[in-house]
Length: 229
Image (cartoon, rainbow, N blue to C red; front, side, top):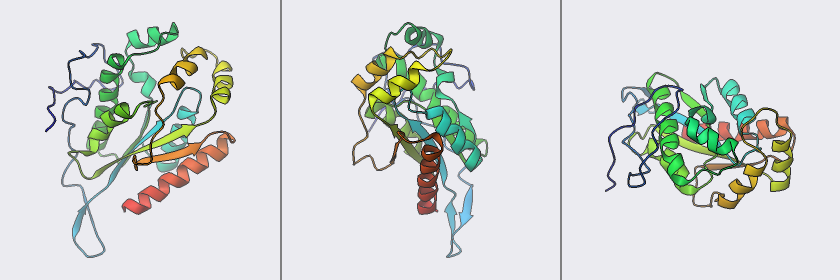
C-alpha cells in the first residue's frame, strides 16, 4: 500500500512556495473526495455516481496548451486552471534563466494542480480544464491519484504533439513569456510520450491550424464523455 504525507495546503491560485523534500512521496497526500451524494439516475432507475472529468492539456512548450485549454473551457463551460500560475517564483526564475526544472522542483507544483482541480469539483463544478506539461509518466501519475479514491472522477490527458522544429519556431515568436526557445530542447530531452497502455490519454497532432487542433481536441473530449455517461 502506498503511504501518503500530510496534505499540502491549497491557496487557490497562489503558487506553492516550499520545495518538496526528495524523501517525500511525489504522489502527495490523499486527494479530497468530492461529494459522494452527487448522483444521477441511470436508465434502470438506479442511482449512479455523476462522473466528473479532469481534462489535463499536456505537451512541450509551444504546443498550444493554453489555446486548446481555453477553447475546451469555453466550449464545455468548465473552469480553467493555468498550470503556469501555480509555479513557485523560484521555478519561474529558473526557467526564465534557461535552467531546466528538476523532478524535485515539480512535485509540489503537480500536487497543487491536482488538489486545486479536486477543490473545483468539490465546489460543484462538473469538471475542470487544466494545463500542465506533464512531460514524464511519473508526473502524469501524480495527477492520476485524483481518481484513486474518488471513482466518480475521471482523469484525461490531452497530449498535444508536433515536431520539435515547429515548436521551436512558435516559442521563438512569443513576446514577454518566461519560457524561452532554448527551453524547448530541454523539454524534448526529458519528454516521455504517453504509451499505448496509458489509456486515459488523447493524442492530438498540433501541426494543423489553431481551429483544426481545437476542434479535434473538443471532439475527442466529447467522445470520452459520451463513453463515460
